[in-house]
Amino acid sequence: MASLRKAGKSGARSYKERSQPSSRAHLGFLEKKKDYKERAEDFQRKQNTLKVLKRKALNRNPDEFYFNMVKTQKVDGVHQEKGETEPVHTEAELKLMFSQDQRYVTMKRTSELNKIERLKSNLHLMDNDTAPKNKHTVFVDTDKEVKEFDAANYFGTHPSLVNRRHNRPTLDSLKNMEIRGNLNEEDLKAVSKQKQQRYQELVKRIEREKELHVIQQKMEMKKHLMDKKEKRTKLQGETKTSAPVYRWRHKRKR
Image 1 (cartoon, rainbow, N blue to C red):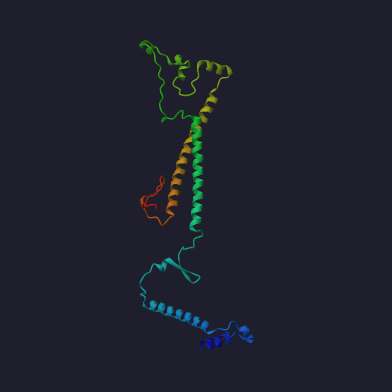
Image 2: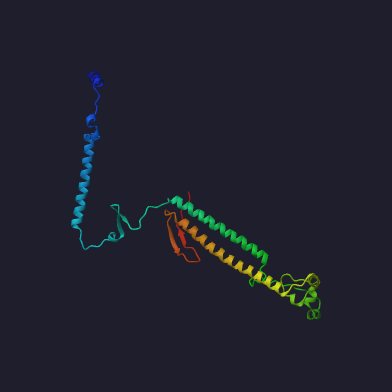
């Protein structure tokens, strides 16, 4: 009997869904029962939602205040938070752009440090009060020589140049300079003015390097704060001269 049942199924005509007649093709797709059922369920779902909303609106207190009354606005028939916009960049793109900015600041700070070292090496910090006070000790045999000791005569230079820590020429070199050509007062003023400008430039570059260092620290801290999964505690707020201080929870590395 089972074989006859199988033979009957195999020889049976396959079921074919009725299609839209060619004369009614201009009416579009012919709706089947499954399509009607899906459409009816969707309609009933929407009707039930409207009933629930109407019931909430009837039971609502008209004198009660909700913050959404002032914080939302209707855009194209949809309520949205005021000022709420979709993010233009993803989190990975923001981190990449932030790292590029950070590399630029680091590069500029390194450039300033190199220029500061170059200026210091040229100026030798001649008039810097914070420079170490070096001493030149001369040893003599008797106390009489100590009383009669003449530093200008000992070093062979002019008395006005004894206390100079740099460029202390001898009398012979001074005579050669007079023979080659005397420096007038205007030349000395120009040299002094140029040296003063160099020191002013050095001070400005040191201040700029400090500002870039603070910016670099703040950018590094912001980069660490982008990772919202890590738990941290704020210890100190951000100021004009320092970055904020956070303490992250210690996590044991596997």
